[in-house]
Amino acid sequence: MKVTALANSNIALIKYWGRRDDQLVLPANSSISFTMDEQLSTKTTVEFANGLVSDDVCLDGRKATEKEYSRVVSFLGLVRAKTGIKTKAKVVSQNTFPKSAGLASSASGFAALAAASSKAAGLNLNEKELSMLARLGSGSASRSVFGGCVEWHAGKKKDGSDCYAEQISPPGKWRDLRNIIAISSMEEKHIGSSAAMAVTSKTSSFYSARLKSVGKRLAEMRNAVRKRDFETMVPIIMRESDSMHAAMLDSWPPVVYLNETSFRIMREVLAFNQSQGKYAAAYTFDAGPNAHVYTTAKYAEGIKRMLSELPGVMKIMECKIGEGIKFSEEHLF
Image (cartoon, rainbow, N blue to C red; front, side, top):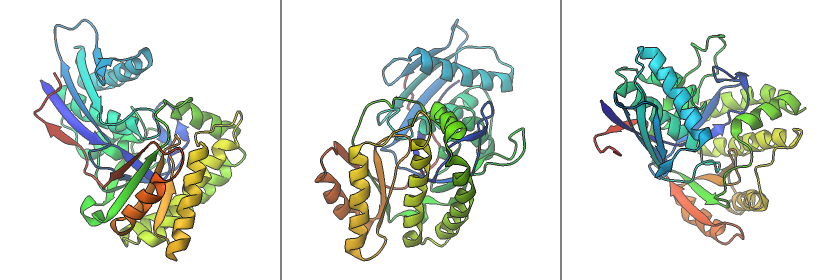
């Protein structure tokens, strides 16, 4: 059976950075994110076919690289193990945005792969089960199963049975929210997120302090989300982003994702808030230099105008809050 699934990327407010178990992809702390709209999405078609002698993987119109192929095949192995099938699969996947540039392509990619491959293999997983499966491909993919605002619970059990994501606020409650993305680099990041997390957790003297403080920010963010209190969310979002990147910079060797344009954007967002006399916009950066500026529809044009005038900003996108996993009959092959 041929199955096509679509998943959107998510951008974290409270970050996932570090693991308590690498093999099961169990995070060191819980996290909260917003799922974006279809501008940041992955569409994936999977079919387990008897005629194949090996898995066939095509990403963005080309054969997968050795590294990409290995990750996809390892994930397909997990799906096969759940069903007992040994059939090889054909996988064709298409992103609407550049991968490995700090725009969370692995989140949408593995969420879509989890949905399409599990259904193609005959599994009928509920959202919680799908979230737990997607997590094994990429931690943040567990959140992209859902739309709106999502919390990924770190859990405490060694087997990961309490580690899954769930929606804490539906997208319909955030129609006024915008993520203005300022792209300052299309290049693939120099070090992958998993490797960077390992370096940070092992060598940064700030890391343990970050884990202690992130619990407080998590509770504050969850409370603000439930009240739809964006102004309260703004400083928490920025301080959380700063905390993660400070721990990276304190690592050895230092993990540096931000560039000169990133820091310029940070300064300008703070100045914008000061000019408005309130918290109107919040910057946040994932594992990459590209800025995500959360704001409301009222200030979106002002933020875009400000960003467009900054040296180093190559492209600006305006995203709304999006939905979770969807299935389609329009297959990629």
